[in-house]
Image 1 (cartoon, rainbow, N blue to C red):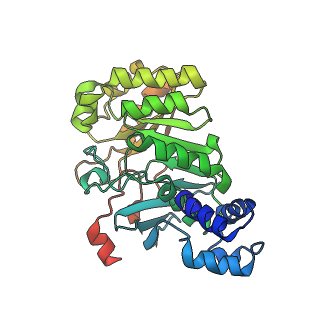
Image 2 (image 1 turned 30 degrees about the horizontal axis):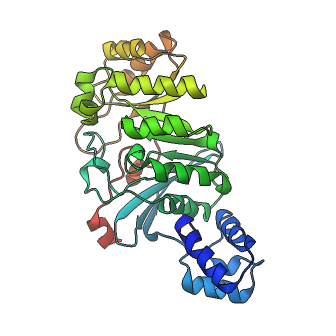
Length: 335
């Protein structure tokens, strides 16, 4: 049950003369992870049957699902007109259950290290379609974290992303455990900074300490260069007093040298930014940095007192790790 369906739901309930609280009852059941209307035991049986016939329970159709050796689950969905969408459930040993949600089918920004940018772009997803990814996994088990780091650039679809993020607490995912990532698409980022007062976390997909290298890796940097993007991140910190997470994928011989780590440390204020170093997950164009290079890079950041962590890779064997989501029409046919 999603936001668009709730509009249709309200119409059907009004037509039946049902009390206004019925819509809230249906959403509460959906957010708790029930599989369908038949499980909503505080609704009259006749109403449940009618809703099952007339109001779709989800805006997405599950096409395929696969589980990694480490417990990560990747789901491939179809929108109603057939666009592919992938989302991921990551299970951690400490008990965390984190979702990686998509905001678009594909991505139009074509970052060179990201498989999603190599697939055909479909369209923005609605807030309902974003929430329905989360609801699918909520039906499997309780979830408590979410990152908007799947397919697409969230700030190109900022209205739907904000609306969906505001619905996640009903599923058990608080605002403080929700992160929205961006490559630095400034129009959407400015709106996010201005409009989102909730403590939703912001992450910047950076990947290079200079404009020259970043433009080679990410064409968006030609349009919105580093200085402008970082200034907006600092404004976010000044307004909300919340640090910005910096994502930095380490590519062997490209952006992983010690002098580049020094440049990154000089670029970022430790009071404003925290760096997540991401081992590269193969998508065909680059090689990942060695463990030695990653350790040396992090050591530079540590000496500069710039907070940093090395992200634990999840789901690489099922192409569910960071940068690997790349469903296309052929995958849908196979599914």
